[in-house]
Length: 336
Image 1 (tube, helix red, strand yellow):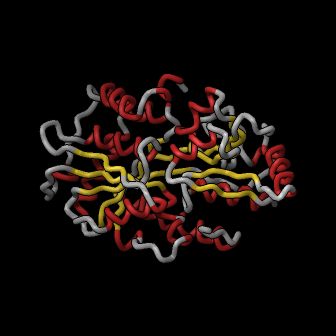
Image 2: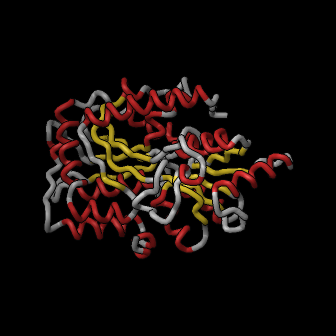
Image 3: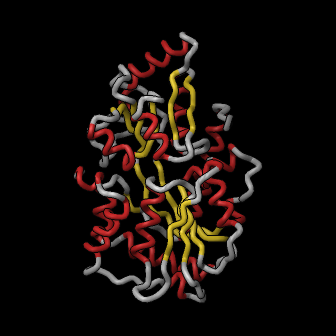
């Protein structure tokens, strides 16, 4: 993994990807052209700029803009664990002019954790495409005297006995990273304190600054901090090592099987959007994300492109929602 790729801003990385891809493909924005008239297209990201969802939205924005036509604007609308931005898309017209790029947790975890959500995923949104997946990482501040999962569990037990549970940060309640932390301390048999933030960037900043000792985050976001020594990777939260982070051992190989939590991201539109329009947009996304230059550079950032049909995304949402609901009820996980 090239260090210079991590140091570049999301906009700089996307420009480099698209510059490399320009000679390979030309994209027509058929998802908008198919019966839609938009002064501009708005891609809502329900979290602050800087995370993987924002990065993917900007890839879509710059990759799918018509050369002389509709501008595509990324609109970061954070708040309420992503629910503010998602609700804004729910209330938008089904005219093909408003898209949603969102992490899996908001689609598959929140419906169980928050039974009074203002939106219903299957009723209020039409799936368009999976976008990408990435490994999640358990990391600590360098001052934490643990380099392995057993050592971290031992520290957490000491902290619990001292009546001050070890804290772990996540991008927000209901995120896959929150659930990874919950599963970790439940399976370890130790109490840890969840410290939720309003997005990935804020969580990383506080752990790097030493305010919180432990963090569950995505590899694309944490990689530059791990490589610089600002954070120490303990494990990837899955059953085997990830090609994106081959030097980081898995939880399973450190004596904690049964936790396999990766992150994935998806594109949806309001449910009133005509199916032919969503299908056409899905085809454009698949073309873009299968361009060799785009695939290679996404992979360098630890993101695996997995663009799909709307039907494949609908099945993934359905299956993961059922799996998370079982785990949440089994371990009595709550949003408190």
